[in-house]
Length: 264
Image (tube, rainbow, N blue to C red; front, side, top):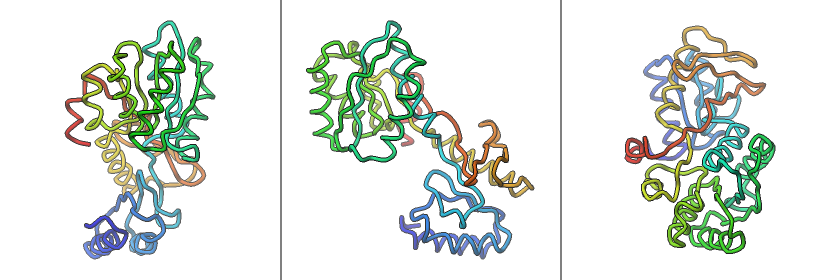
């Protein structure tokens, strides 16, 4: 399919005509695909969305790769795990108005008490531009000479910060972590600029969505409070909007970066 809502609707209509048992979709447009998916459900087809959601009336449930609380805890834990004596950390985010990043940073701050000795000294914004993010990382290193880690909950920011740390000759002194893509971060992991980072595991996500679809087809009820099996990924617990979080973000490091860098 082409990467448009129209292209997805074409595929949905084709699947309805084939009489499939289930459709699991990551939507290009949450509202545009809903009528076609409603038609599928009217024909008795199980419909779930995953990652990029569908309007509530166009699916039985939605699977998020993770939750804001799990992401917030993960990004500070990735830094703290390599700071046994504590120390100063800074956040390099996207824009000051980036909804997701702001929520994740707030969730991170809520659990800072679980990581004694780890001190958040600054939050700066690279606007998801590589050159600005690089300069902001340079600024953090200049302003905070004792900085131990830069946490970037953005794929643009983490790559730029790891390059800035490399160019400053501070590999081993400052660990860059956060949310990144294995294909982009393999070099930083190999060099040691980034010890570990996180993002979803697309294999787990596709598998979990498939298992949820299967179990709903087999009779599991997608309703608030329900627990529906995801096979080896455990159970998904649905909230009031029939949404669930799969798991903590998946950690990538030297042990698995080679395997995943060719995938995404």
